[in-house]
Image (cartoon, rainbow, N blue to C red):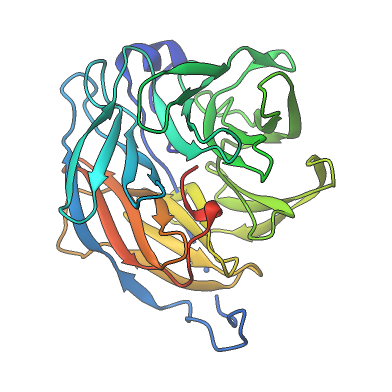
Amino acid sequence: MRRLTTPSLAGLAAAGLLALTGCGTQQGTTAGGEPAATADRTIVAKRLAHLTRPHEETGMTLLEGPLLDEKGRLLVVDVTAPAGEPKVIRVDVDRGKGRPFHTDERGVYTSAQFSPYDGRIYLTDFAHGEIVSLAPGGGDRQVFFTGEVDGARMSPDDLAFDRQGNLYVSDSRGMTEGKAEGRIVRIDRDGEKATVLADRLAAPNGVSFDEEYRGLWFSELTENRISYLKLDDKGEGASRHTAIRVDGGVAQTDSIAVDADGNLYQGLHGRPAMAVYDRHGARLATIEVPARHQGLESATNVAITPGGTRAYMTVSGPSGGYVYTFDALAEGIRQSNGG
């Protein structure tokens, strides 16, 4: 997700005010042994759709959680959409047009993901500490998880599913207060058991499995670092280490996606761009919007077409919320589609 600027979660829930965050560095080889893109390679994305303008009630708009369904239709969430306005938007990627998909009176949604277990769309509600789900076609809103985990309510930001449908959530608890109280939480697919896999984190944001489901990549927004959490055969944490330190300048690390070659796409807040790294931490490229496109402050997340390379990046700022498109470095997989 992004960086919260409201003074309290209560104010966030009432006003829907959130602000984004994320960034990147190096050089290597592809899985086939060919020279990889160099660190100074820039890929310029093209504008596909202008979906939202800043809301009068919240003073901003913030697109997140791009998610493609099996028919290639794109969904995005608008984090700061007030009650009654579209909180989830469906985008016709051929026409570059959006239409409302879901709204409600309460949710402050920061990510979206299809479950491999029941096929429903799962959304993280940052302000209320909940994870809710929708039917694949929209509607039938259900609360999947709410309440405390080890005595503290979550501030769920992004999520990832393992092959069995268990959820792994970045809990940005402590971000508003500037305290390293964040966690990575595993929730069983029935929603009955929640386990803390990593704690004392600095506003964890993006979270994604690697391409082989051996571990999780996660970013810490206020430390501009990406860590790797290796998992054991029970899907619980075995070890973790800092993997990449992102030189973001004024920008901070937002959401993460992983392609079929294991490359990481690190969203940035404070700059409308994404940094791309290989699995060894080498900086491969930077995805940017055209310099003439003004009023943009973040590129939060990306969805890469499963089995293809067309990528859809959510970009926002004072000029509104947009989807940009570019050719990814490798094909998309589940780990680069939502979350």
